[in-house]
Image (cartoon, rainbow, N blue to C red; front, side, top):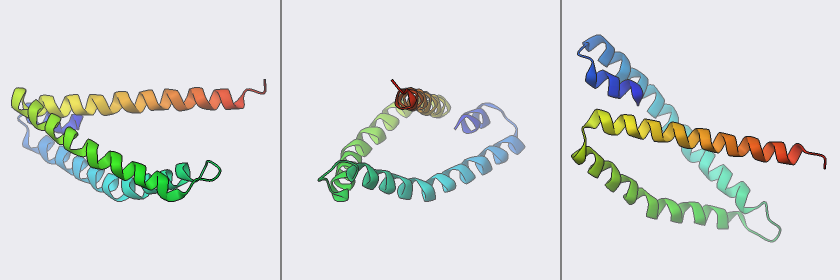
Length: 118
């Protein structure tokens, strides 16, 4: 996403092609891995508690996705109208990096707490 926002700011046609190639590979890889990883994680989370069913986790993930997807699309459209496309993409990429860093720190903290023998 950062490469896409930079490709719109730099007037080099070769860089634009490289950026779109990187975006294509990234989106293609994410598209084919995201769904299976999400379903597997939801099924594992739903069956981790005693007496629970895998379908409960899948139903929760599907319900959240149904309600959250339109909000994300609406926010994306409003931001493109208010700012420019490169700024919107750069803000989206920054948000993804921040969320990934926050989740990584939370997982590291959880892992450190579970490794503590006391």
